[in-house]
Length: 248
Image 1: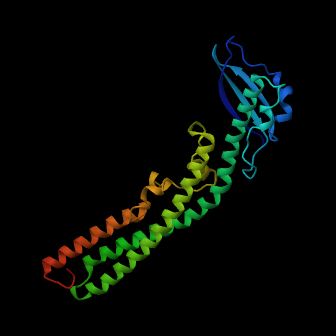
Image 2: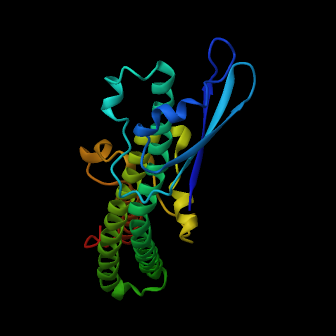
Image 3: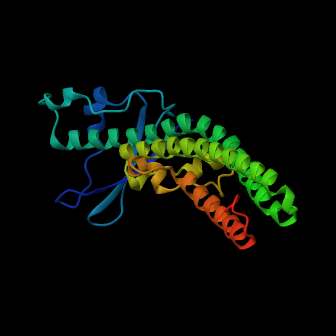
């Protein structure tokens, strides 16, 4: 199905919009997906152009203004400006299609990884809570269960951080092409796929892995370690109060 996008532009010094008749003069440089455009004045100084394109798949090369226009002396400044705008619109729509194409499978993968993390986290909390009902002579056995649950939770957290990083990098790549004014949020792509990501843990640090590359841990793992350290601190305090040096 055709895709459209609206871009705003300034009118020329006379207060008139650029002539639509230029389309015929620039047709040889049009993007292959370009169909037509419509212009509308929004006031004395501003106007908008609605660009119509055949739908992109995201697998096409990134739309770029043909270099030949710079050596074509038959083109006026108005012609080139129109082509710049056309290819800007094409890049935006292409970036949306690309994000949908590449992020879709990763979002589906993330569903399972987030579920696995929640199960591992709940198992960890259950293993810690079980100490309240564990007899003194069974504490060491319960400690083994807790350590096992910690390892499983860490593995799940690492897997989640990896997929969250992939998703945020894909989203950042789309913004790099189209700009923040034409950002396609990951949540929108997820909604289109009926993927519920409302409780997913995705932070700015996932988008910029270099920010934690010098640190010990990735974002969700770091949060997990804070929780497990708090749990262990409570166990150490109980062991100290009970005089059990083996657990202290």
